Image (cartoon, rainbow, N blue to C red; front, side, top):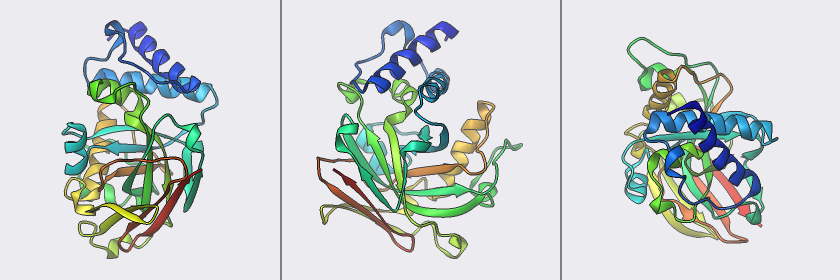
Length: 264
């Protein structure tokens, strides 16, 4: 993909996000053909948004790491996007529904990195990334459907637009996560007090840290690293739920606690 095509795709996506308007499919001449091109466009989108006072990137989200989300979106491999500092909330997220085009929520497990995860000969696995994890959270990922019809948009284009990423709400961090069985924690989502889905932490690629290792290896292939102090959302154990004005969302993960979001 030529540099001017990367720039054109990134400007198309960024302008829509800055203006708060929906997008249709990218023009064929600037549409990324594969995930390598998609992440190149995504990187340029981050630069443009940061230059337009949308904040700095403080972490990453990973989508399609669980069977329920892979089936829902028809995408059977993980896909990553960025988390921007102003979109991170703690414990109780008080959100304005009108700030989104079509907001949704996901029930997630997230981690905070106490040290950098740099490239490693032979690649990373879940054991090699574990030492960098300083805290584990129950979390709500906030997503936004910014497309006229996302079902008609190809995967590389969705990745270029941060794969629906729009923020997160993090619960209290659990520092002694080593004492937990991270493959067997039940997660549940409630909207306005009604259970709308549940799943298990082991649904995330068999172990949540498998998703973290995947991201570390993906970034390494692009000459980047997971950095100390970053947040990583590892994937949803519940199918995305689209929320209405005044909805209250609660996610509870066994032994990791609760986190809430309200869309007023």
